[in-house]
Every structure is written in C-alpha cells, then in structure tokens.
Length: 220
Image 1 (tube, rainbow, N blue to C red):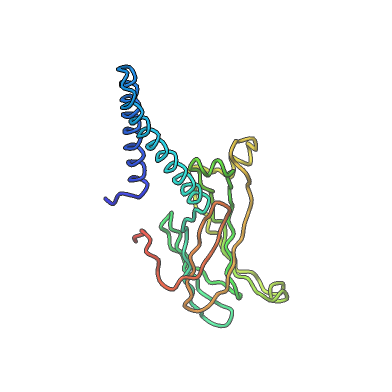
Image 2 (spheres, rainbow, N blue to C red):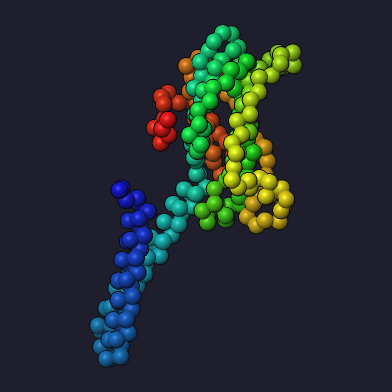
C-alpha cells in the first residue's frame, strides 16, 4: 500500500504538536523550580515549534483548498469511429458503472447532457464534491439548417441511482450547502479514431482530447 503525501503531512503535524506540548510543560515545570534561564531557553524552543506548526498549517490549508476547488474526476471516455460522412459510431465507457455502450450518431459533433448538483465553496472544502447524472448522448450538426432538417440521433445514457440528490434538491430547496441544480451540455467534434475523456469538476463537466486509452480501473 502506497502512503499518500497527506499522510506524512499529518504525521509531521502530530510530531510537531507533541514536541510543542513537551516544551510547554517543561517550561512550566522549570518556572515552578525558579530556573529562569532554563525556562527562557525552553520558551524560545516552544515559540520556534509554535512558529513551525502555524506555518505548516497555513501552507497545508492553502494546498488543501486549492486541491479541493480544482478537483477533477474522470467519469467517462468516448472512442469514435467514422462510418461515413457525418455518421459515426461512439463507444461510451461510463467509469462509475463500468458500463460500455455503443451508439451511432449523425452530425459533426457529439453532445452529452447531464444533470448537475453544485455545492457552495465551504461545502467543497468540507469534502463534498459536485454531483452529476449523465442524461443523454446525441449527434449535433454545426450547420443550423442541417440541424433543423435532419432527424436527431439521441440516446438515453441515464443510470439508475440508489439515491437521487437531484430529486431531493427539487423537493427541498432549503437544503444547506447546495448551491445550484441545473442541466449542462458539453460537445466536441466527431473525428475518426479520436478519443475524449469526460471529467466532472466542482462547477460542471469538461471534456478533453486524449491520445491513448486511459488507465482507469474498469474491468470487463
């Protein structure tokens, strides 16, 4: 098992805190024995360790805050194969469900719609991440006239959820920490042998081109 950087950080904080407590009681003990010089020396050690503890805590807090607010989680991959002009096969792998499905889409771009639950910033810092539910995948034409004149190719990609936060928020708008409940779409060009990775962030969906199969733990 590989230990994380956070583990060593917390161990270091605990060690400094223990040393700090040691110097505090040692200084108090020397004052009771009226060892003024020794108590002053230990007080300087105490203040030095206190400085290290505060500095390390502030640095760790800033790094943790940055990490939480820039959180990205890969949720799906798309592998595209061209059949003919404006006709593509999309292999969609949803990582949480470890479910791969194939769809034939017409158009120039793929589009994925999702339902998003966004938390307030303070809730993100407490460890709550934005929630998502993928809804549908569809083909999209860049030309407006083609979009109007061609029957859309749209498929549901919704997964059954044991706990539907979207519905809960709809019924109980007063729930604390929940900032927004909204639908979002992300779309990019369909090209032969192109792969994309879909990510969930604290503010919604983003997608990036990738050049090879990502190393995600999903086995079939």
